[in-house]
Length: 239
Ligand code: F6R
Image (cartoon, rainbow, N blue to C red; front, side):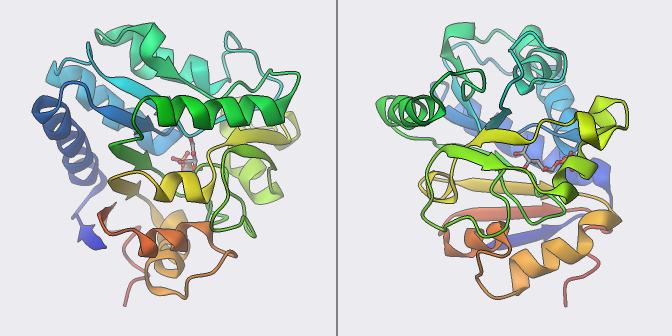
């Protein structure tokens, strides 16, 4: 694992966006794993501004809320259109998110894994980290070999994400369909971006703590090609 502390958020975001841009220019048919959340908004803004082509790129998002249709403004499908897909030359048919509205979530999850496999696996996966230690929506005690499935969100996560729901954590869906920790570890390269004081302690536990299902993000220690990009605040808990 390569930990890259940056002096500030702007530089951490710029470095992450540049890494994605570089990979896309080197391999235009990149299979790219995407994340949502506040941290990623500026990454996508920079990618849009870079003018890099997504025309041959295929994307798979980490997760989607259960029960929110793609047209709901709080769905991650809407987030992706708003922050990236509507502003680049990507083919919508090549963009994938887990089907949170599926009647049979188990089948939808297996189908998502099959689509990733059919695309040849994910070349580069972008990750954020939740205050609960999640990557994707792999809340504490997710099996380290877990695959795409539905997960119950912790109160910590619903509080963390309440901002998108008018500040009301009760309005945040209770479940999400998420790639598993094992799915994430299967990707060929990982880049995790974290910023802000609220992430300092969980970043330290993920990067320096023991490998434990209590902190799903600690699983990235098992990956052989993983960068952790941090601003000074998020890096403050590291020894
Ligand atoms: C979102 C996702 C989550 C977020 C994490 C950080 O698709 O998978 O793991 O990356 O919750 O969210 P922010 O950036 O809002 O702090």
